Image 1: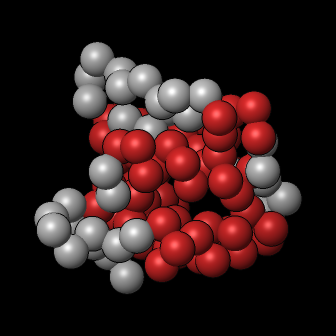
Image 2: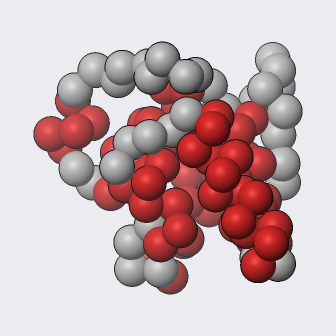
Length: 100
């Protein structure tokens, strides 16, 4: 389930269960920690995680990175905040990085 960033990008409710399962199985974000745990949801960060997943043959992670890359910046950040159930971070405004 890979999405391109277009008008048909998925909504958070559509993809949230997949990210919740990932987070539960890995007892955290695992390889997605820099993006969803620490909040660096830039294209560059997620593309780097995806490239490493391709190298390792981790097809699930490749697919999840594809989903993230298809989402708008603020939706990527919100997924990490919602799934981690970190109310303080979820209430803060999301700032775009310069490289995005």
